[in-house]
Image 1 (cartoon, helix red, strand yellow):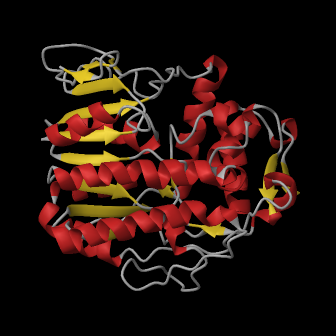
Image 2 (cartoon, one colour):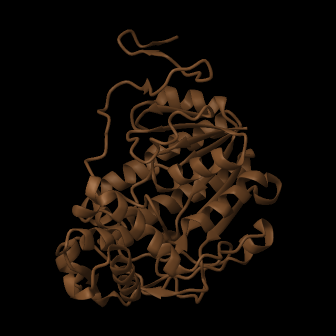
Image 3 (cartoon, helix red, strand yellow):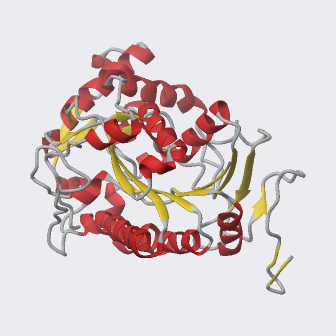
Length: 374
């Protein structure tokens, strides 16, 4: 089987590629604009990587959609601060660019595994969110924080319509705060553009206080990346049971406030580094206006818990890794790499170039000067 992963260097893409190569005989074809998380995979005989940008390299991506059996478009902006500082950028990448991929998958009759998000539930008031019955509730238009959720939800609806009316084979999965190694880069965290665990760890590495927005009373269900990968592998290997389905993939048994996550992160950081809490700036409370910017349209959600009964039934899956273990593995990864951390290698926006060229790596060569394919 051949899997195309667009955004292969990201948190899910890099970890999933490693799992596939270690446990199956499948070939992974991947594209991204960075390679810092997949350097150890580049020389694997079943890993075929090419530098590329979803916004630019349409020919290569469409060719590989046609060539592969399953497509996972994992490119998205998933950082809350960007939702409020650059909402149009979020919409253009997360919806418009990914819509192209959905249409190509339909055109070539391939199978789509699409990453939805727990954000689509918005301010749903139910105790546990159901994929099939829960309402998706957002704030007013001036709360631009919801543009990410709207973009993902609209693609969910487009994918559903393609499946119902035209037979698109698809499965959507909704990660509930997956965490672990490679979650975000420290560079993005230093600009405030990372997810919460990476932000906490980076602040500690930089000897800055952990900041709790509005006191950190918001509750989330954090899920270890390895539990998430177990669910994804079950989806990949069980098309009959998962076709035309949406799955919540999260851990409802350990509801955790952001304040508690800060304490767990601080404790793990001290254990890993040998420092004492008195050596560190600690934890401080900040307002949403100070953190995200005044009048930037931020709005938070107090409660977000998944109903995972469908995943238990159809995937025979449930999470098993304790939150403390997940936090520690994330801390260990970043502390290990922090002293050697350099700006990640990033390619400029130029025509796509295969990272390695072998007889096994077939790709579409593009003569950009004359605009013809060979």
